[in-house]
Structure formats: structure tokens, C-alpha cells
Length: 384
Image (tube, rainbow, N blue to C red; front, side):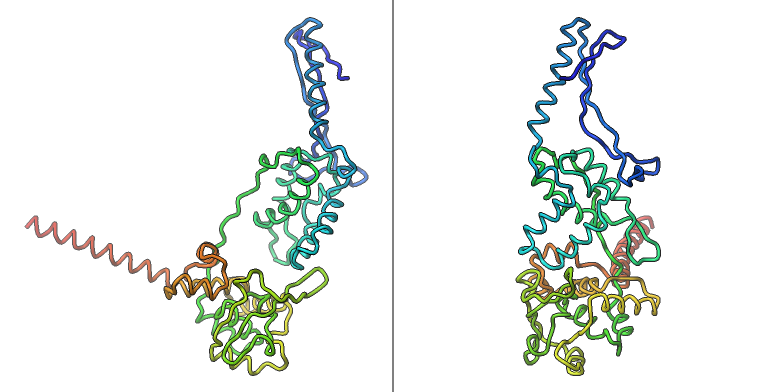
């Protein structure tokens, strides 16, 4: 039973433990104890009564008792809440492994090893809105362990992907947490400065990734689709069809019979240059490389020619932007790219090329300058 104490002012105050928060230093870094566990600060809830009589003491204690009873009623008191977040994640993955793709399982494994490390060993019963929000704020400052020369904090999109695993796990066992109170940083739209196709043609000519790049830029095939292409299943006369895809799973490459969605299993006529390269391939697999090998070769090629970095996947953006430039009807562009809706195609994939943008700007400037000059000439004639 909580006991109230009388304050110098005459009021009664009763304090009750509410929750604990992880301590951080002035730089926002977590403070650890000698056992390398995050230090925590206990947070108390205060209940006061301005009545200086014994009735005020009873009133303050009653409010505190009511708080304790309601809190206990809300929290789930089962063995499940004694699991750590990491144990709960493992259990969640185990229960959903059959419905999750190999690439998703691989990403979940990465999150377990790198993301939200300061709360992974917290027990589920210790969580509340404040602890979760503080963890998100710290995670947003975590420096990525990628291979880039100048490491930066993880992206907002990456943070959302990590939270996309943690939220359903917590929500399953802690229904009393108000997840609507949790805020995440906004994902900034990514608009890479695309390299014009003629420059890409020039740098990939006669290289070992020419075929892979052309399949991505010309036919809008993704890396997983390209890796799954074979002569025996994908080629039929002058047409190439997505029959299988290869994605990187936790234990290595995994072959799947269907793509990301049914719209991705599409067929294209093979352009002459691509047909020529396909005929030169020895063996059945058109591009016998790992995903990382394709990506690294592409980036190395950009570096050799001192070109800005765009990802291999950005080649699909080039394709979508070319179709927009050529005013290909949305229905056909959407079908060629394998997008479920034209909204995704327009919002995510279609950008503008710098040179073409300059031409557009020039046309608009010329139009208004001519109109302005016409207005000036008209005024001069009126004045004379």
C-alpha cells in the first residue's frame, strides 16, 4: 500500500513507481553498468491532495492505489511477457517462417544483429511508450555498418523497416502499449540523378556485365529476375519470359518460381543486341553471378568513369523515365515494368534526365521570353 508524505506546503504527496528509462549521456549515447547492461532510471508518478487534513492523506493514497490497480489490469501478466524482445522476435519468425520470403528472413536476421541493440535484451513487460520512443530516437542516430567510406546514420526507410519487425512482435504481447503515440522520422523521397542511356551504353560496351545492365535498363528486369533467367526456361524464340527469380536468403541464394507479384511474371520481345549477347553465353544461366558481384562490378564501372553512383536497381528507374520521355501510355509502361499500379511507377520510378530537363526548361523559358518580348513591342508601338 503506497504511503503519502506531507509536504512543507501542507499538501499530501504519494509517489508510485511507473517505469524505467535507459540512461544516456550528453551525446545521446547509452550508459552501461559494469556488466555491460544499459543503466536505467526509475520514473515515479506523483499524486497530491491539497487537503492538509488526514482526509487529504487518504485521498492521495487512494489515487496512487487506483493507478497501481489499473496499471496491473492493463499489463499482461503471463510468462510471455518475461521473454526478452530478442526471444520474442525469434518466436515470431519461427511462427511465420513458412509465409515469409527468404530475403525477408535474411533481413530479419540482420535486424537482430544490428538494429535496436539497446533494447533487444529488455523483457517485454518492461516496455512502454516512452522506452520505445527513446529507443527509436537513438536508433535513428545509429551509424550504418556498410562498406561506404563515409558512414552515415541509417536512413529513415531502414529505421521503418526495423520497426516493422519490432512493432508486431510487441503488439502481440503488449496490447496495453499505445502504438499511435510512437512517431517515426519521415522518409525523404529518393530521386537519384539518372545517368543518360547513351552514357551507360558507352561504359558497359563489351564488359562482363553488359548483358545484366541491358536487361535491367532496356527490359526493366530487377536483379533477382535477371539472376533467375535461363536459356531452357526463359527463352522461347524471340521472346524472354520471367519464369523464376533468385533471391539471397539467410543461407545463400534461393530459387523461387514466382516473382514479387503476379505482374512481374512478364514477357518481352528480345532486342537484337541482347539476343546477340545471350547467344554468346556459355551454359544455361544467362547471368551466372551473385547479387553482390553484379552490384560491385556496376559500382566499380561508375568509379572508373568518374560517374555519380546510382544503384543497379536505379537502372529500372532509367527504363521508367525513358518510357515517360517517349510518352508511352501508362498501361503499356506499367505492364513492361511489372508494376502493380501506375501510382508506384510514377511516384517511385519515373524521374527526369538532367539534359532533357534542361531542354524542357529552355523550351519554357523561350516561350515566356517570346511572350514578354511581344508585350514589350506592343507597348512601344502604343507609345509611338
